Image 1 (cartoon, rainbow, N blue to C red):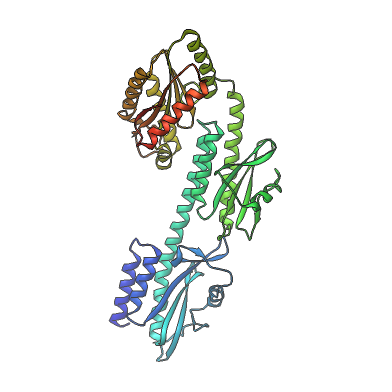
Image 2: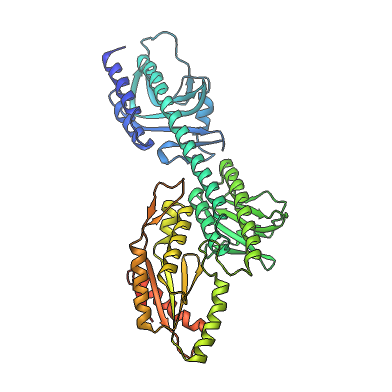
Length: 466
């Protein structure tokens, strides 16, 4: 083999050892091939056995349409060395002096002596190649095959890791959370991040019908038609050319408690997507079902299981009592609404176990910064409500600033073996309002909530007064 061809194969080897994406790989190979012939286009297609589809490596691994000629080329090249100008060939055992005019050249990508894709070259018109070039291309295809095997394996491993992380995270939520209005958005966001090509909708059964609970809107009437067909025995329903899939959430008592829907206007749900969604839905059903059970058990409890503060039900009870006392004795009373800044980012960055640690940590700081007579509660999600009896608004501002600074300056320890960080710093925003005898307890906290909104809108990590 001539020196220039050995040099070419050496350059190909160097390129294939680099950590680059498939687009850079394809462009690099095209440049190297230009030494021998003017390549108009180079593309690589890999056959996905799970979905029985061909994927275009140059286009973010998108699925090639069934009608494409790529499938015919893939069938033609099996047990052959090349497809040249749409005709299959095997290389002779001896290099001859034959020269061919060539428009296109396809070579198989091989793994364990089985074809699993093709490399397709399109040449400029009037391109001629000799047999030595074809022998060179066979070696070239073998080199690229090894690289593609590693890339495909890496992609699949990445998907599997993300899938198992999602399963583990959904299972972990129930350890500390039992409020559906907190759990469901977390599950929806996890599924949405994992099934990236489809929009995810979560429906739960309320008042004998399935109602959308995440996200806020769904305008596709086809989805509602599918929901009417679901039963506890349904595995899943696919419609609209497999672009919409409905996966029922079933309780341990074999009752339909909800449904997860994946919808796309472009991409079909692959066999792999369906398998993952079935498993993720089953795990979500377990989590939601246990949340329902815990909610029934805890509806008469007074303490929030995660933070050890008053729960919302107990808070509302104490609010009524304090309002009555304030009116009767004509004492001052202030309300405080607190929100952890960018809490969603904490969950997304560090995981929900770390998010729970932050909730516990902030609750502990709140409790330690208040008097025994003050009434701190977990209002829901990352929000806290505090009643400050016998307190005027100026005094409440001092308490609020002290509390805000305490949270800001206190790293919260994260005792989670899966977390890469040992502590997290967060800040809080706060809204304050003082009770007047002409309003109800609800109106008092509505004003405190408006002040909290003002604190968040004006930059966060601050105290605002209504």
